[in-house]
Image (cartoon, rainbow, N blue to C red):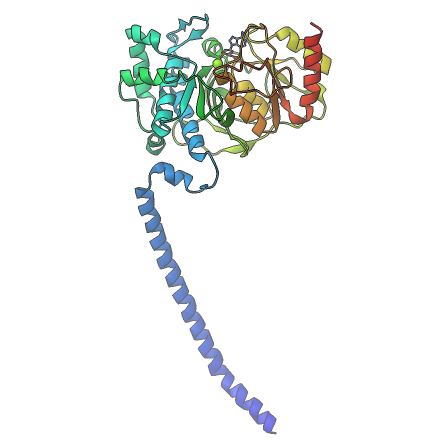
Length: 419
Ligand code: AMP
Ligand code: MG
């Protein structure tokens, strides 16, 4: 009986207790909602304030503060993207202001303008770095007409996004500053310190013919490539687009074309659509896994004077490769195999005396290696970027997915030995 009464008492007490806890629960929830919304409003205001106060560069880098070379990567990608605005304009002009250099190779107003724009951005952001660029301004100092044309192009090449343009440190101030910037690419290169390798238009012959070309920039630290960027205005944006045999001929930068490749040592390789303002969304790229080498697609230069088409055909034949080679100008070859559109890049020397230039290979070498490939010379040696302006101790280039590189190299050696 006693127990029953106790239970009854408890039951009588329960409803008010329950009522009290429900009320406090509702109260607590509304308090929490209120606090949360106040916090959200405050923090969004705060982020607006910091967004306004922080320099653009710091802001865009704040998401990945621990990754090395993020500032260098951002500056390099934007500088290359801006330079392609200029090269694309010249590409569509009939008269490209072409001169012949001492070595008989062509140079255009596009090469000079792109070099000025990129070096300006490097000097504003990294004033102590050395730069090894392909061009120099002595002929422009004597050629007022050409200089004026380039100056107009350089002034008009601005990224459409103000923040992105701000990252690059603003426009080139005067014609004299433009010439100085071009000449600042006269670095000797070497094994010490931070050195940028720049080819403002790689594949100038392709650029003139309406083929492929690339704006190429890489940062080396103590002879090791740390950052590589390739702007390829005439390559398809789509990484999975198979390499057609005519990719190197009659090209244009119309809709669906233009890709920006990039890599940082140890951080992988990416591609993104080449844009006109801020950077577009990037995606990781990797080489195709080649299970049967006879199915591989190999790339080579269009110019027979730049690599031996005969040796390359003999190597392909010996490997059992049946597809015809894909010929295209510039480091677009490195970008194309890095994203698995092609598989192998062969560059066998035509002359014993020619030394490859560091600006023709530094960016592509890193992008392919970060995408899972291996890049060596024809003797199996890694490309050595620490020997000055040229790859003085290398002989040709063999780039392939890691898994088949050794097999390709054996055949390269046997073909060269049999000559
Ligand atoms: P590609 O478009 O792959 O044929 O390479 C273009 C680059 O070839 C140019 O930027 C030149 O620096 C370079 N080049 C010029 N002459 C030679 C040569 N004899 N052998 C190899 N590369 C060369
Ligand atoms: Mg070049």
